[in-house]
Length: 68
Image (cartoon, rainbow, N blue to C red; front, top):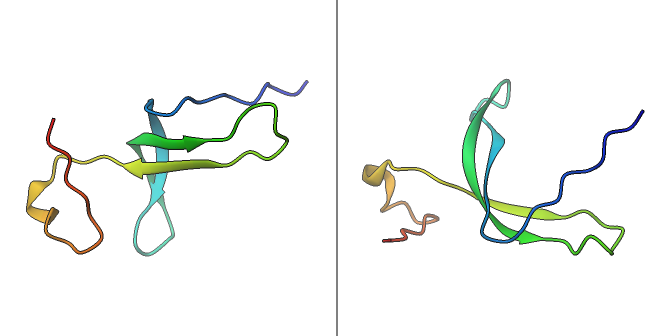
């Protein structure tokens, strides 16, 4: 019996697997849902952003700092 696909909403915080740099293993980490496909469309695209509290890495060129 197939399990139903989970549905996500934009703005939700989920647990997702992010690979280590060697791509041999991954770790579950929190992620913010940036975009989730409309469930009426047959394509399932999910765009997430990794969340971290490691501020010493905030100056990296590809990182965005959100101050709440």
